[in-house]
Image (cartoon, rainbow, N blue to C red):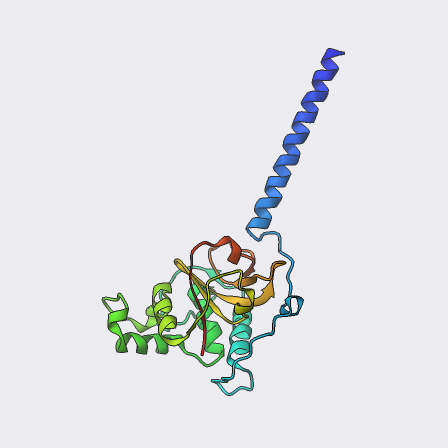
Length: 222
């Protein structure tokens, strides 16, 4: 009798351990966006979608929409994460890094970051901590893009709770990382971020903004 009781207790103990392990795994998978999060739209929070008054490339699509569509087109090619130097400036193969998400998105709207950042560096050298200017790589560095956007874009709030101020097509800069704000949101209205952070990233559009404590910039192309 006593032996059967001990066996039942042992089974119950290992069952609890197994359940706890499953819960932890699910939490980790959800926390790191391996399990996709439910997406909500601006309409779900009565937020009016921002539309730019500018159409830089005169394609009939406003800049904000153009940038967001360009980013989605870029990540749809499933670029692999690798930091490489390109004589062409823009990656011309299946590889890329976080800054390329922004560069290709803006190029879709008619903004050539390689040329624009280089011009800004040459005109405002004192703002950039660069010893040797190299147009092919300077626009692919987060620190340079932060300076460029601070000087040439609209600076917006970094308060994640002010959800109306975060719009699809905006640019968000973290410490050492950068991405584009999505027009999809989580259940609190905080937007997803379209980005490319590491080699084993499963989804390019992720619910990460609430989990980052290193937001240092939020910009909108003017």
